[in-house]
Amino acid sequence: MKKTILVLVVLALLVPAAAFAATEFSLGGFIKLDSFWDSTQNTKNALTVIGRNNDQLYQHGLFGMTAQGSRFNFTIKGPKLWGATTTGLIEIDFDGSSDARVSNTSSYALRLRHAMFRLNWPETELMFGQYWGMFSEFVPEATGDADMMYHGWTFQRTPQIRLTQKFAGAWTIAGAICKPYDPNTANDALFDGQTLLAPGGPPVGVAGVQSASVGLPGQSSETPQLQGKLAFEQDLYGKAAFWGRPRGFVAQLNAGWQRNRYRANTVAQAFGTFGQNQYGTIAGFQDAQQNMDAWCVQGTLFIPVIPTHSANLAGTASITGEYYIGQGVSFLGAARDQDNSWFDFLGRNNVGQFMYDRKLTQQFGGFLQGQYYFTNQWFLTAIWAFNRNYGFDQGNSTALAGQTATNPYGYRFATTQDMSKLWAEYNLTLYYRPIEAIKFGLTYAYETTSYLQRVNNPNSLTGVGPNVPAQVQGQPNAGAKDLGESHRIQFVAYMFF
Image 1 (spheres, rainbow, N blue to C red):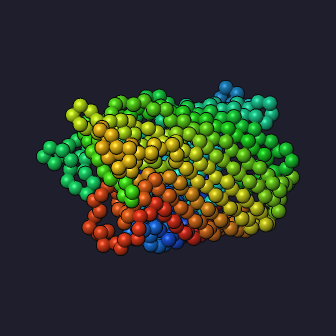
Image 2: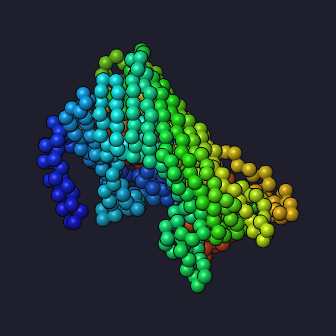
């Protein structure tokens, strides 16, 4: 009731303000029902890695329904300023929920998606506020609200100041200063002064309690995130549909950079090191303060394969391809935070403690989408998306290999997470849009996750460490596995307004 009253009050305040400052004010959005069955414990938007096939706690089916993907937006057309037209957008959804799999409306919370305004001249645009980053402008048309996020599609909404300039008719160049994002790897999230709890045990430290802000690793950025774009778009030989609207040929190149500062730690961490079939653990320390450069380069092509020269989309087809390469790419939403960095063994200090150097994970990935319109109402979309982590120093990861006086166990690679190697999804969706306001979609998706480490009877709670909780010790031995697979059926229904 309190939330409803608050929304009504905000709307009541917005209406007279809009009438005073803008020449036009409109409400838009959609109502959406998600229904899905997943062969694993995945979320509404399929955002989690797939648990290994030998993990019985994860590998069983889940059915869910929710309407929390519904959203609404306010579009404002403002007065002229310096010869430019002014427009604004505020968009809100209900995905601020901690558990998207339950059908309990009390768990849903309003979430700000976009809040920005633009000044537009004939060839120039200046934007202020929270909006899609440049890497996220080509969204794959899947039934989930964020399908392929973390495994193929670069997903980012960020506060920014962006300048866009058109030139030579079909060309666009843009640059943006954005809020830096600090990926939440391992203990970084605990650098907040709260009590630190050891996994599966009592609080860490003297007398059982220690402030999490004392001695733990963490990270921050002293500089903004920078993004740049160069794009070419033109109707060269006709158009094809992109999200239901005719669009010409597009070629786009994006680049992004951010510098993170990683704090060293004085409290020992439990590092996972590679064994034959199971992570081993060793207490170690990040050696020093580190400044590390995260970067990404991405290329996008939208190609009308069977084009149209009118608004009639029947018989048209298109291909969208988008691929990226970089390191520490979680700063752009191109990978899950747990895969963003790893640790390289340096040796022992003068008191025999194991010391590590943090390194950013190298990654490449992207998606390929093909779409065909049978009629203006029926169309089919096929998507393949993946990301691949590479560049790890695993040559001496196995026990008894490469042993030295300072490295008696022979390991080099270490992690505080269960890191993935390859994450991929194959997605096939049939859509039916009988009228402009109504849309239905039926999807089959196959998703896989392969990990850097084989694990026998994995612990689905922590993923790393030799201590398996009592509730999973009774699982039968299914052999060491590094692959998880899932199958998914999803049905969605939209009403646009």
